[in-house]
Length: 71
Ligand SMILES: [Zn+2]
Image (tube, rainbow, N blue to C red; front, side):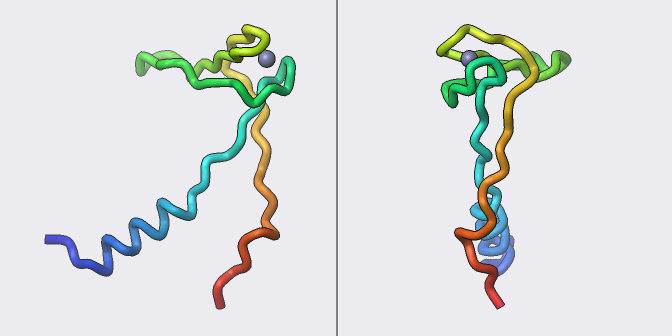
């Protein structure tokens, strides 16, 4: 049975990994979705706005300033 400390640690880590906002490289729309992959193929994205399909997306890093580091 896993210890409570370990579970809390895992929850803390998973919470820290925020999903990054992704944008279409063609029209800069955020309505771009990851298509289902079949394991052997590279990840493909589909833009619902302009119909772009491809493995490339714009990925923006979130600002670091909103979450102060704990001491
Ligand atoms: Zn697009």
